Length: 162
Image 1 (cartoon, rainbow, N blue to C red):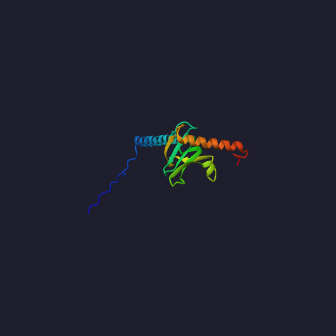
Image 2 (cartoon, helix red, strand yellow):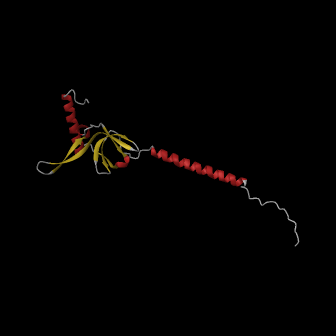
Image 3 (spheres, rainbow, N blue to C red):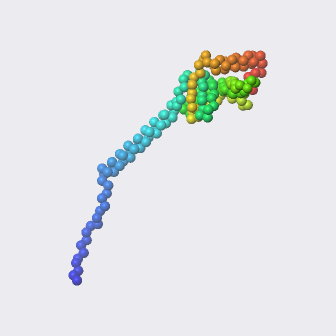
């Protein structure tokens, strides 16, 4: 058996990333980070926009909720997450003495046990939002109720105090 001499060869080197590959990876990472930042800023800006653009503040509006309830009131504030109504009313059904169904306009401030001045409604609970015409039957009923409340307050010095 013949002994061969062992030849020493240099170890095989694993190719190291070339500088252009490192630069490309960094550039792609920066572009991705910039794109994500731009998306985040866009989402943030959209979150500050009004989701519901109902019309001018101070008008009388009808707000139907997804559960079927309907509230009527003066629009005080409209934000992306909620609406705030003042002078809030709702319709209450009842049975008339003759057995026929009837409806009456009810003031939340006067009739709800906690007498709220305003009502805040989350935007995700709103199904529809409509302006109430100033000459509509509902607007006239609300005006009559408010005029009656004003007349009662004028005759009673303690009215309106809590």
